[in-house]
Image: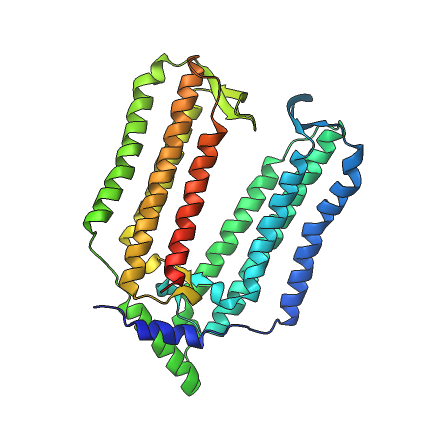
Length: 357
């Protein structure tokens, strides 16, 4: 059954472009901005007095890594980017993107619930990056400090727990929000029709199979290559590269196995979504094409991302092997930024394709 594009347009039309901020919304926005700006103000006040080269990591009281002091502004910039990019979504309800199988509640409920989830995420990101800035400032001032593993653990747990609660709340929408009144009933029927006619399964096209095969082949060749050279590698190998592409940290060669495991995991997570079309999520204002078209277009993007990520991990593992045996001296920033640039370009082309429908 093909998805009726008119119903998708109806859902878009009934999804509000703006939704007034509640008192809770305003409090959370102010709190996010305060948590985000506090470390920036501290950094701006302290920056002039910092040495040109600052310590960014200590081990057993000794400096093990240094960076130019402007590196702190990269951390601060990441703080602002993550916090504001999450926060700004609260002002544009139609930018919210959810899989069709979770469109169970009225639009206003989904928007308000999503806003609360985004506030928690933005405050957590602002707090964590602010904590990193404070740690680096202490290091720069000669006070041996390292990022606490417990702080990282708490941040990760908070992000995943809040995400789980949010998706569980969406999933239980049918039981918790029975439609009341003519308008809500009409909206609920529209959502139900979109969910029902969005393909639950969609056979792979020839292009899907070719792209899937390419990404799988890259991952397989990476694993085979690592298995062939692993025993001949020295026990200590490069584990990190600085901004100049040169090795600035080492670790046991088993770290390559972890990197290979992350490679397989990332590839599997990206590819597996292609088998479950109803988990595909695009912003509401971009639901202009038929469900089948969106699924097929998204599959191409996901296969492309899988190929790019597999290629990136192949390059990292192969280069590390070459450096470990003395054939190379570091990684190429041009190649690294090339992978990132192609990834960003693919996403931009995809969203432009959706937008032009």
